[in-house]
Amino acid sequence: MTRSHQATPLEVAGLVDAAAEALGMDAALLFLADVQQRLLVPLPPSPGMSGGGAAEPIPIEGTVAGWAYRTESVQLSRHGALTLWLPLIDGVERIGVLRVTADRLTARLLDHAEILASVAAVIVVGKSGFSDLYALTTRRRPMTIAAEMVWAFLPPRTLGTHQVTSTAVLEPAYEIGGDAFDHSLHDSRLHLAVVDAMGHDLASGLCSAVALATCRAARLADGTLTGIAERVDAELEHWLPDRILTGVFADLDLDSGSLSWVNCGHPPPLLIRGRHIVPHALEAPSQLPLGLGPGNRDTLTAHQAQLEPGDRVLIHTDGVTEARSQTGELFGEQRLADFVARSLSSGEPAPEALRRLIHTILDHHRGRLRDDATIVLAEWHPTPDGRT
Image (cartoon, rainbow, N blue to C red; front, top):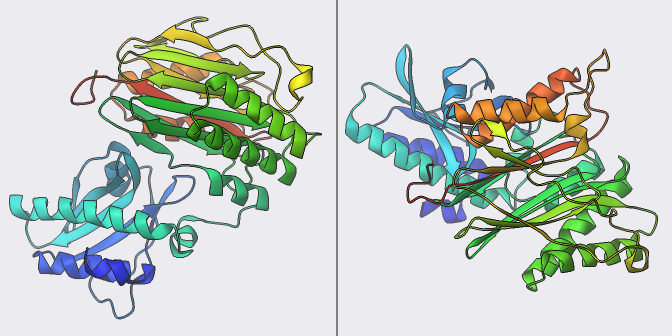
């Protein structure tokens, strides 16, 4: 950790490998999940590195390494040398896996490997903000300018504490245009936002970027939910007068489970309780989209609902439910809710449930979405160990 402070991003792989050798392991190599979470891609080896060496990308589906990533658990395999696969997790955000090889497995070596994986994740995330190396590693093709702009504004896909977990996915990852999301923890409150700008071009990306920036500025100034939405409305009408955007802005009180939200022309959030969606639980009278200006709308209203421990709130854009198969069949809200409820009731981590869900939606549409598809899933689990 001390040596990493002044190390270049390219030197991190070598530092981790050298630390592994000093701890009694043969070698170690970092793999990062690609943007679409289909592959685990090895970090380029550091200059002069002889331990972990180079490797090929590994599919997340159908491999031991992928299973470690998907289940966020340590996995063991034997292909010649004994190999440990450890998830790389920053907070609750999974970023990849660490491959460790050794002659034999002991409890002490396992403890050291888990510590090394935790330290390596912190180092990689810390250096990713000022280097292109990790972006180049995790991208399989170039992004559009609109997508580049939107991704630059997005927070980590997953965050959480012992009280709550919030996780998100969005596609098409390399051509995202009008969709964006935000989630943030402040004291005992989780803030959520999902926006969907009209169109699918650079101006759409700019529209969603302005909405997120305005949302954060208003939130940091202790703005109310209606105040946040009103300010987004005013900024869009001023700077992008020909653009409109739908959105949901929500706050969850982590102590009481009280959910507040404002819906501006967006699909209503879904409340998932146990294995089922609670019908109409978060539906409310629709309000106009944002960008029309203060003089063209009625007063915005914040709605309220009381969650129960273990409840999940799912916010999505219409590109999720309106994705069509080649025969014209909609993916639909019921299929969406059923998929999430089944996955989570089986004990699958929420980030993995959404990863599989977005790939199922892409497969439903033969890999090419006509509209952006974004999902944010928040689970309230107010127990000391974070489980319901």
